[in-house]
Image (cartoon, rainbow, N blue to C red; front, top):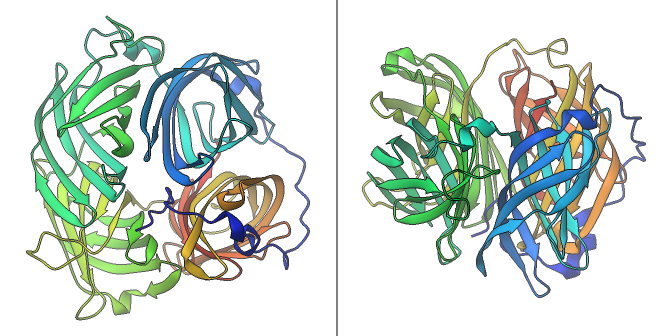
Length: 523
């Protein structure tokens, strides 16, 4: 099974078929405008990306996690990264010996990290002075890799405690591949104190095999930096029998990557605060986005629902399963239900589109308005699921959404798969990163994108498009994205709030895609 965001297989011979160039407009990128500068990337940042690498013979899933130090003047002065490639396992603690970066007024730029004898390159778009989105754009004589991710400024005061600053309740979502390169999702909740997990509950979907239960774990100082977390916030952990490396952002967020053999699981652990005390306290609309794999290939589900008085209603969902799109309006989704345990923040929800198709999910709330979501759809009582996917659950707020509140500068990122020549068995990864200005729901900006089969990077591509809102804007919205020289790409959009939207492609106009993404306002 192919997993969206970390494509397993690609075919270099069919680059031209996958690209679907031609038929698009010649769009000139606008002059970069805004208030960003080199000084806005200044400090120590934890980063994470997931994608794939070309090792000279084949394309393999790749994860990076690490920390870099930017001096506010265009120089990278220090850092470290850990790399996990499914076929070869982990390369730990690679020193970042230097590097450089640029920041345009619109927040777009290029980040280069020197690794001694080689270097890696990223396209970046700042979303604030504390964080940003990034795609791996490495394509040099040493290596070629792609992937999507983000970076967040770290609180270095969290690095100096004798025991890592992971104390209290946390929610996590680790996704990727198991030891045999099969898709896996592990979500859950734990409470830690003194470097030890004291209570826990987790749900694992390993290639469709479901399990649920408690687990043990520990967190420790990095042995490379005895007595502290060093200059990077790097530490080591064991969770549910697997080893991990982690990078502390602050006491509320820690970034993890597995280091056990060829298992490749990555994700963030976030603090759990002020969760609802009972199911009746969960009220309002929620948007969700999950991505992963099915027997048909890559899989994306994006949608929304209401919760009120212990009832799940107004469920709407769009699905892209192996480049086959389906939309389920609320009238077609019935028999919905939801349950919730305030002790752990774990809940379950389900709804049905037909006698045979029941969609089931588990979720863990990290707050009253946010959480992680894992699909467990399958035959009840069998312990098996038909798909492997996970993602985010967020409360919708700020509606009605209109052209007046969906306006201003945004960063846009998508990642997933593109099929080559209509052949569902041949796919390559696609990662795109943009900065766009939204005016009267029209898009205007600049993008970088990497369709990895051809190992060809497109930079500074003129970008246009249009968002169409329906009703109050909470569902049934669309977005066309026009890249210069490329057939228009059509998306379905679910607005979380005026600062954030989830989207996925909604038809196969041009290349057949299975991609998921976000539109995030710049601050």
